[in-house]
Image 1 (spheres, rainbow, N blue to C red):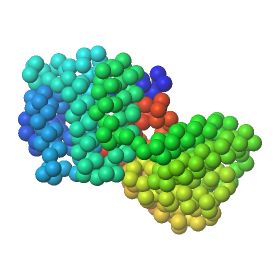
Image 2: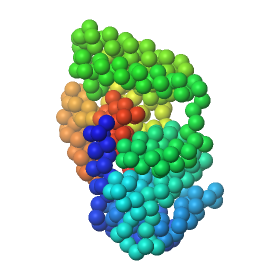
Image 3: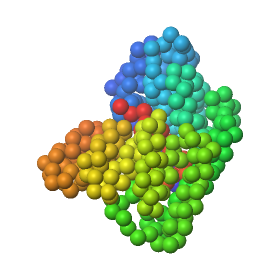
Amino acid sequence: MRACVITAALVVTSIGATSRVQPADDLASYRQLIDAYRHGERIAEGDVDRMLGDKGGQLVARASEPASTWAADDFTAAAMLHTDACLRLVKSGRRVDTSGDAHGSADAAAHLEAAATLLTAAIQRDGLTREYAIRWRETVAGLLHAYEAPDLEANLRARGADWSQLAKDESDARKVYAQGLVDEIQAAVAGRLSGPPPPRAMPIPPDAFRWLRMAYDDYAGALRLDPTFTDAAVHLGRVALLQGRDGEATMFLDRASSAHSPSTRYLAAMFLGAAAERGGRLDEALDHYHHAAEAFRWGQSAPLALSHALMRAGRDDEARAALLAHFDARDSRVFDPLWTYLANPDTDLGPTLDELRAEVWR
């Protein structure tokens, strides 16, 4: 737990010292700051603090009003910008930015309120954003607890209650899913089974196979409780693949490939590609790896798998081009959903925050 929190802290403090964006008190400049954040520019510590402080939340209110042209993904990106500012202030123990003059600073609570307001607006634009918002709320609340900010944690849990309340079946499904994660992690430890399923069948030690069977039962139970739970579907598909149940695995992975979360779509495509490769269907595997790269272009496993499959098909020039295109385009930003595939969202808070942030990148 401590290591994960430290990871998150390091990322939060990396919102660096320089920015090409000059803060101003109008909506266009606010949007410019958000776009710069999405494109990976370093945002100076005081820029977003002073902007929100100067306007007293009016910019957030204007951006969130029904007549606004902002889309759901614009709101989620803005929410993450304010989340980073909030966590930076809390972690530093300042709680209020002091880099500028007094009237031009915003405290951690203001940033947290701004983020929650923006995510509420995102859900109003697109109801499927609710899943992202729930992950954000639980992750940030956990980090605030770890940073010993109980007042902010309590405010956040109360603030998000209107859109984060789960139906009983949804709540029960997530509890069963959490147990499945524990079992799948145990299988990975016992059988060295982390990462995507291998493109060739391999023997699995009995202990690992036993944990896989338990994980399979848990994920299947979670899907029975909540058939829309695509995270359970992608994990069930992978576990089925490791057990050699390729046809069944494909059915679950196909379901997960239509998820709203780009990370889940990426994982589903990667595992479908591995299944196709294992079945000797290289053209199909190439299609899946292409889809993975399109769903989440910051991951490095997809272009590597694509390049490897092209080499197997005797297309060496295309294999090299696929790798070069990826490393030329990623702009020094790398995050792979496979890195957090076995992360427990209740405890692995740093990696989960990284994933939320990467999902708003452009």
